[in-house]
Length: 341
Image (tube, rainbow, N blue to C red; front, side, top):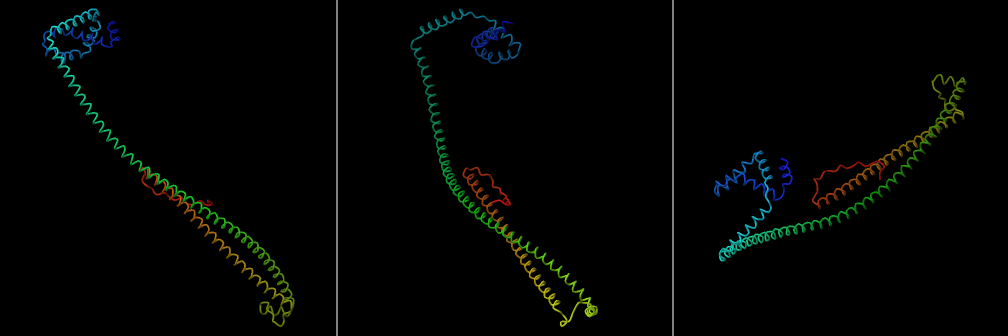
């Protein structure tokens, strides 16, 4: 068992094949001697493979093949005997037959080489035709790619030119918007200053009016007290219920009070008129501010739309030139940011 495993470990090359062949011939010696040539061929083709499909039979065959000892000297002797017998047969053979056989062998070899040559020539021609077709296709594809490259370069130049124009337009729009914004800010500052001045004036006028009303009330109370102290004036006041004196009985002080009241009323009307004008100017300033805000929002929308349109056109043109443009999707416009330029 140990020698068999050792043989299996060394089983490589032609030696193990030769040993297995000798083992098969040895085990099948009786069957081969009883059969003819056709029977021997059938035995090797059918019966012998069936016999050694079982694992036990295959194991015994390998053990027998490893145990066979073939002396090298004996093989060399058999080889020399075979060569001697072959040479003697060739010498005994008619030279004409040998030459005919050699000629027939050479003719067969020549025919085989010619057939191989024809096959190689056909394969070469076919390869040349295939290579020519591939070359033509490659040249056509190269022409198409060159045309596409030229179109892409042209579109790229146009895109860069359009980009430059868009940048110039954007810069101009920014400059216009900046100027308008500065103008609006200056007007807002002026309007704010005017409103503050008007508020201060209104506050001063209101304070003055309150003071004058208080003084008028005090003076009126004094006059009323004096009138009530007079017997004749008190009777007139009590009968009519109001302080209404005849024009002939008015003294200089009463005339001064009426003149002062008229002056105060006139001054009050003037102050009310100035206040109304101030409110009107304030409303006009607010309307102008709203209009400027609206113009600023419109400019921001135009700038954003111009940016989106230029970017989408540039991207679509480049993708169309390269042949990888995806389905277009509408891009939502962004609302303008407050205070952005």
